[in-house]
Length: 145
Image (tube, rainbow, N blue to C red; front, side, top):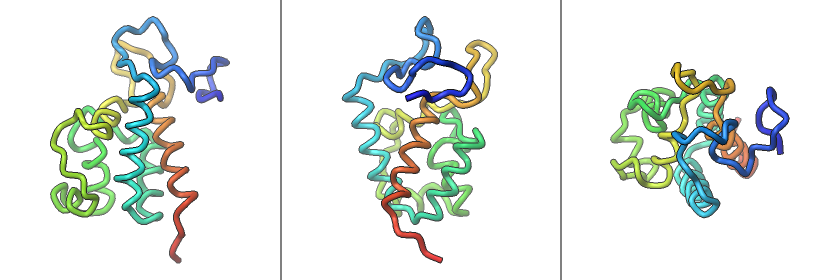
């Protein structure tokens, strides 16, 4: 499956992103990716469909950046849902303060802006996969009107 519009490479199985020579990119073997996806869907699946749609929009706009508290997963969701991080943790039953849990580790990799060192496509591979996971969750959730 082709993830980026500006390349002919199939990157869906290469978590290093478009540049395989980039040794700074973290390595995510298939079992780690599966654990990250499972944890993401478990935590984010607790949100209402409309709330997941808000997160999806932010991901598609490139507004999520796991490097900063304000724009990582909890920071983005807290802003979108107009709540604080503590209340959100309670609601999502997501209590880890560590970035080494699967979902935290995954979200730390999302950074869609060019940091001046590594030139990336408009959205990074981690964002693209997270968008796919959000859409998968949404496809299984009933929508309220």
